[in-house]
Image (cartoon, rainbow, N blue to C red):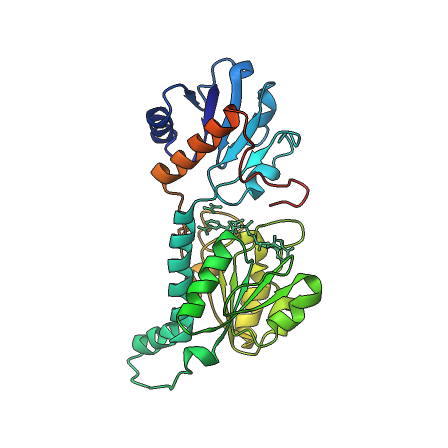
Length: 309
Ligand code: NDP
Ligand code: OXD
């Protein structure tokens, strides 16, 4: 089986070596050294050049290096009849949970506020609420959101979750769909976005969402830049509807020089590092999935292209 690694922003050779070590029966090529495109049966993709997927007449599956598949689905050349497999690796959840805990605690403990005071040499104390009196709302109760929400419950926060279909998770209140959104947002003081980017979720972190939250709330976006309406965030911070934001993802990455987020005193920018695919464990999961499939089993973690995740 010929597997093409098409990950222009990553170290494709390192993935190739790991795939071959785990399964020497594979023939692994690294884009752009495609060889005969008719021999390519599986593409392992991340930030691939749009249009490229149309070159492989015998393509049987596309595997995403990442959990989010919006980049593949946005390619008009993606053959929608071919199964698209997303990355589901417990390690992604471990890293994402650490990031979400750090961001939520930063807002909960008002560390951003104290950093601003430090800059002007001011020693001023504020009493903060107990975690149980702080409502944290997690949008997206999937692999990453459910795990992060569980860890927040473990820290004693008052946690609520929102998903497309209603979920039941221990220790937290859950809401679902459009019908449950307003109730979910009302009372949410720290909003964490871990949704996939789809036609339904694009721009969800915008003025109408912020206006449903209590004044002075905070937002953490570790999902995709397309969820956030940049201008609405800036306006909400300016007007005091929001008091801070932690952003890991942006519509254009790297975040362009001169973008208002870089120097905003109430925004923490991190360079899409909330959770990074771990090469050894992720490669092992891909190889195992491929092995079972080649032996006649079903592929695991196939996304529904119509649903978008
Ligand atoms: P999952 O597919 O496991 O979970 C998605 C969740 O979002 C589900 O609970 C789903 O609801 C919910 N959802 C989807 N559409 C809607 C909607 N229209 N309304 C309400 N809820 C909705 O995804 P993961 O948890 O694995 O990953 C989430 C995202 O995190 C990825 O798509 C990616 O964009 C981002 N990510 C970011 C990283 C970073 O480093 N910043 C790293 C890894 C991922 P339901 O349960 O009903 O299906
Ligand atoms: C992912 C990511 O989707 O790293 O896995 O953003």
